[in-house]
Image (cartoon, rainbow, N blue to C red):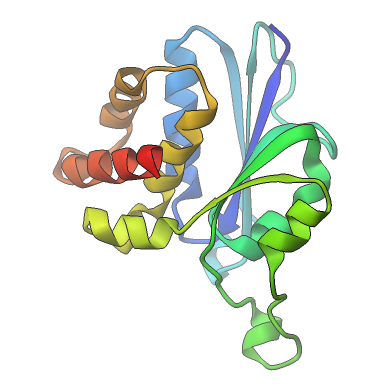
Length: 190
């Protein structure tokens, strides 16, 4: 099988590292050669965070170059737009519709771009957008956006829900497991 490339992008503190850990566990359990690379950026200060997940028969590097991503999972709308040049033709962006103002918007030096989903789809990009924050809150915690998005991402793979749940059980502390299972199912069914 040819190597598949997934980018997980967001803002520091949104749980992208847990999402990549979950995905990595699932892929390793399916016996794929899997590489996960975390690029933190300004994660501690609410800055952009990127994680690369690559899998296939043999993967030599964890890094994804421009035009190589089969899928970009974005926890925030502007981050989805920021990384579009990494998407390969025919790839898909799975994104949360939540908007988190970056520092230039907070200080008044810039405005948050309007109609980003429309802008991306008008550019020929396949965008699968959901309100993951609303679903996470429905599951019981706004912090479960990452798992809602992993649930929604699961629709783009042939792995069973049981396989995803097994990886989730191995990635999340027991006291948060039921909340995260609910978040996953809400995202998968969205």
